[in-house]
Each structure stands twice: as C-alpha cells, then as structure tokens.
Length: 423
Image 1 (cartoon, rainbow, N blue to C red):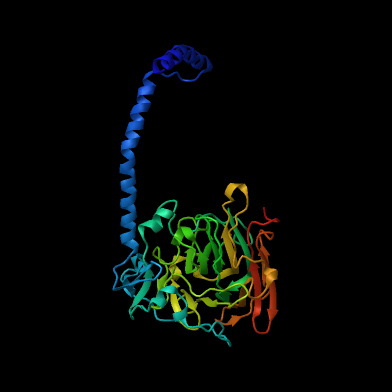
Image 2: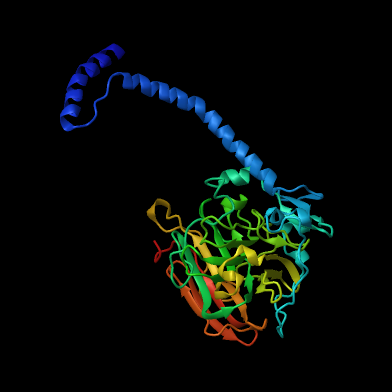
C-alpha cells in the first residue's frame, strides 16, 4: 500500500509546481519534506528543554516570594502558612522599601459607630488548627509550584487579567459587575461590612468576588485601584474556598500590582490575618449570616493607604509611592460583586455572584453590603452622598439599594449567572 500511495502522489508534483509558478506563489522543492521531518525532530528534542527552562523560572520565582520561615503551620485542608519576619516580607524587596521597617499605625478615621464586631480567631481556617504566628512575624500563605502552573503564564500569575474600558465604572472584557458607587468628589477611604458566601465557580479560569474598590485615574491606562474583600478563585488558590484578599494596580491591571503579597507592594503589619487564606465560617441560605467589616483609608500624615479588618485589626498598608493618582486622593469608591464570564460553549457562565441569589430574595438569601461609608478630607467617616447602583448584566446578576437606621446605606446584590433570562 505504501508504494502504491507514493506512485499516486509524486507524479502530481510537477503539475502542482507549475500551478504555483503560474499563480505567483514561491515554488518549493522535494527537499521541503525532509526539512519538515528534521524540524519536527528538532522540536521534539527542544520541548523537554523548553519545559525545563519554564520550571526553572517558576522555581526561581517561588524562592523570591516564599520567604524564610520563622515558624510553619500546616492547615487541616492542606495549606501551609509561613510565619515570616516582618522585615523579610516581599514588600521589602522593593527598592524604595529595602532596609526599612513597617510604619507605626496611623490615626484612624473618626466615626461614632463600631460595626462589624467579631473575633479574628473565628475568621480564617488556618487559625482553627490552634497555630498562630508570634509577634514580629506575619502569616503568609505559601505559594506552590502547582499554584503557578494553573496560571496561563508566570507573568500573569497573581494578577487580574483584562483592561478597563468603562467610563463610569470598572468594566472590561469578560468581567461583569453589580456595584454601588459614589463619584464626583474627593475620597480618602471607604468602609463597609459584607457577608461571606461560597459561590459556585463554573471553571478554573473564572472567579467570583465581593470587594471595596478605591479608584482614581481616567479609566484608561493610568487607572489606579486599591481593592480588598473576599473571593473564590480556583485558578489562584486551587479550590473553591472563599478567601480574604487584597489587590492594587496603577495601570489598569496591565503590568503593575498583584493579589495579596505575591509581589512587592502591600506591607503587612498584623500577625493574625493571612492574606489569601480561607475564610470560615460562611453564610448559609436561610441560616446564619457571617459578615466581615473592612476599612481602607489614607493616612493624613504619611499618605499611605491602610487596611483595617474588623474592630482595630490593622492588616497593613499600601505605600503612597506605589501610585500616581492615588498618591493624592480617590475620585470614585465602589462596593459590590465581580465575576469572570468566559462564555463556555458560547453561553453565559453559571458562575454565581455572592450567594447565587438575586437581590430581591433579601436577607439570609441574597448577599449584602451594609453600613456603607466614605472617608472625607478631614479623616471623618460619613454616609456616602448620592449612592448609585448599577449592574451591567441585570438578567444574570442584579442589585437593589435600601436604607434603614441599623444598616444605614446598604444593598443586596448577586445572582446565579446563566438562567432562562441569561442564556
């Protein structure tokens, strides 16, 4: 059969070459077949070398971000928490921070209330093992080789993908939102309590999060954001646990910034909270509700942006020099949910936002943000004036704002993603 096939193919070559010459396409010789075989063989021999170089780069990166551990805690669900000396955390790899130590706590914004009272010991799963980090250290979730291999590339590991294209609120390819926001003034921080859920995420390349955004810039390449909240991200963490996280960028998520402590940026100061660690407990449908209180504000004295969890747990700060527009103040604050829709098989994703229920379901069923506040120029917390709400895909995820004396400005938000009205 082989000889027969060869007799059928090769006599046709002169005709094919003639046609190529007449059509103006460069002719080829029979040696092309031999060259192709040699190139294929060379490619096969280079593949292991290329993979080895990739793995070596990953190991080098792991050595950079996984700092020497003063103490190591093995969690019940397989994570490793390293207690790292404060001055050895990734932030101090930055040239402008090298050789320095974390700053002392700043003046907290003035406020008559203390919402979100809770015990930090009940907040993250790693604390349930009975372990804790000693004073002078911070807990850092150890990054594994598998964590990086789940990312599309080493360069994109630990970063949000996409680029902002919306003029009035954050919106970029594949990312969908349901948010409350204020704009049109100068803002120096924001505070809110948000209940924590464990939404279903349809595939590894998607995520679901609920967070506060502190924003400045033109919504172009110069966009600055500071972000904190909870998220479910199988790609970043390898599971479907909701996790406490931070993020920052100064160029609309292109090359600057990262999640948590995965690059030089955020300076952690507290030994009780691990960024990127799993949250426990979570809210349940028609059952108990568990929420966390977050405050982001600009230190009036040094200009750094601090993050507080609950009543007085100062997690750390973003140094002012990281930013351009946010070095001064924010021009917008957002509260709410975000998901990634990768449009599997051409239909909308079934990834849930919040509890996976629409806003109209209300308390104990829908997700909420309550006691929304912003920080003014004089370091005072106050209700946000003229709070607006928007959902860019309301048939998939929606939002409803309300007000009462106990919760102040609040809203319910979220949804199931793909449904009859969101095919």
